[in-house]
Image (cartoon, rainbow, N blue to C red; front, side, top):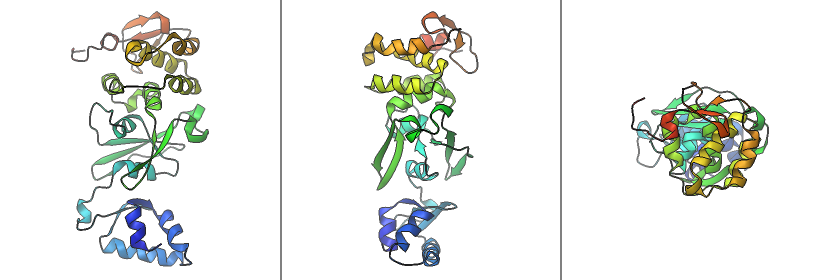
Length: 266
């Protein structure tokens, strides 16, 4: 494949992807590297970080180019999956606009900033870390001339309640998820149980029960979560915020969350 054809078809790509495509016709890796350097110098490419590049739109100054953040997040690791609040934003269900993009990966990593956007690696939960697609609920979607790997809305719900620090607080999580018209509740329950966390089961169960009418939640959806809920009271919040005990879930829920009083001072 000719370099310009490759760049047109891959708006964000890795060094390995370009070399594999270019050497398929018998060219050497050295030639591939020389071509990358040539097109970088000409302003046709932008180096995002070592081994990761973006195609610069024709006529645009590379210093002003801003690659699509979902394509970038997907390419930061071979196993990267856009997740948490970033996945909600991708699906158009985030209550607030952020410039922070979380992605799942099997390994630990460091926050990476590019053009004012933060890319945050989040190590997949241990019970699903070695499973295909980190336990399921991963979509591959065409996006801006490339492909994005992103979690489903069902997995977003569970992941955000499992690790609320990646959701921006309870108000942001609640308001964002309440923008979703429909959830596959069976998928929600199955993935929740896969995490093997009593606290997460209680959080998800409480959240679903609070939205029975909106999403047609039935007792059959809640029963498996009830069986997995904590035997002793636990706090909804990692910060151990005081609140009222919801005995059915053994969950201490802050009053503002219990009654969704987001505008009240606390």
